[in-house]
Length: 283
Image (tube, rainbow, N blue to C red; front, side, top):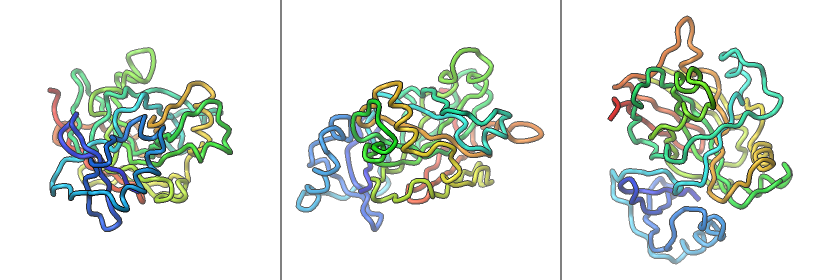
């Protein structure tokens, strides 16, 4: 299945995207795509309900929200592509680098990117996001695949000045409102197949900036789920964003390139759709 949520920010309703690309409102199912949904076998129950349930078309032009309700946490993985580590001058990590993105950064896939106050170095990062399907504590890599509900397209926006020049943790440069556009949909694992063989790309104002494949990841999705679960409990609906390939603005030579109001960022991952964000000035 492909899960969507649609409607005004904060009032999204659940839906599904069918194989022909049409979208159906499944509010009659009675559950949003939140922790309780995933923990209670919601994917299985929804699939059964869809066989006879009363669905309605999603109106054309309706805003898409993030395909899951706000998760308890967004865990991000840094330097997980060899070429990205090289372009930033960092060593290949021996273990996954973990940081957090505030869940309040979550927004719809085509919502505007709002530059934070005082920001001058806003950067882009196309990433594969893993959505956790069940409680994970000390999960083995062998068991981790079964704990994944699905995958989604994510743009892990960063303010590099806040991240790298203000001391402390990376999270302060990752957590501004609108810095986590997710979607257009969550694709269940059966829709995606091999998550380590997906092409990915990102453009800025029509110019290709990132083009790679999830096959270039240093640590694959099951490894990351297992690894993170050794340090914290992952709850159903939690997100792990798995890192970005080379081509970020910070790595452009001879001078880094960062986003300005009016720029347009577009991105996509095979089988996970595409998204688009227009950059707007601070509110």
